Image: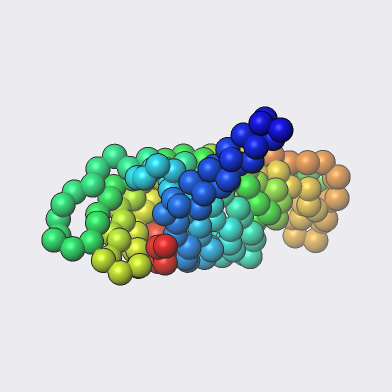
Amino acid sequence: MKKFFTVIVLAVAVATSAFAQPKAIGLRGGYTGAEASYQHYLGSPNFIEVNAGLDLFGHLGGKVSALYNFTFAQPNWTSRGDWAWYAGAGVTTGVVYSNCKVKGENVEVKRGYEKGFMIGVPVQVGLSYTFWFPLQLSLDLRPSVGVHMHKDSVSNGDVVVKDNKVHTNFYKQGIFGAIPTLSVHYAF
């Protein structure tokens, strides 16, 4: 009975401490797309960020990413609100279009956008400002490196080859994450 009581007390303590940590929910948008964003602080100021959204670069796609960010500086630039420089890395995956190069039997090298599965490693660096009311603005860069796998028909003019092979290419659209992105969060 004592073990059961101890387990219950520990479970309640862990749940309470998890819910007591600061959180933020909002939107992240920029050149490559728009995402719903959630941040969960782990013993402030470090946080986990999870994003799910649409990849709007070139063609419509969808991505999910999770990153661990650590705060490396908190300058005191203003008398009200909090500034923070942060950086981190994580994993991203989704079904997206990427600029690919494919060679079929009767087809020379084809370049174009192909839809397929993508997995990669994003790195992020950014600056955030949390107002004295529950609003947080942040500007960040998040390029990613990954692979893009697709199984599509290859065409060159009137010739279409369905080769039923999985083609793997470097995910070239990830470099566009180096264009600054703005996030707006409700911090609670």
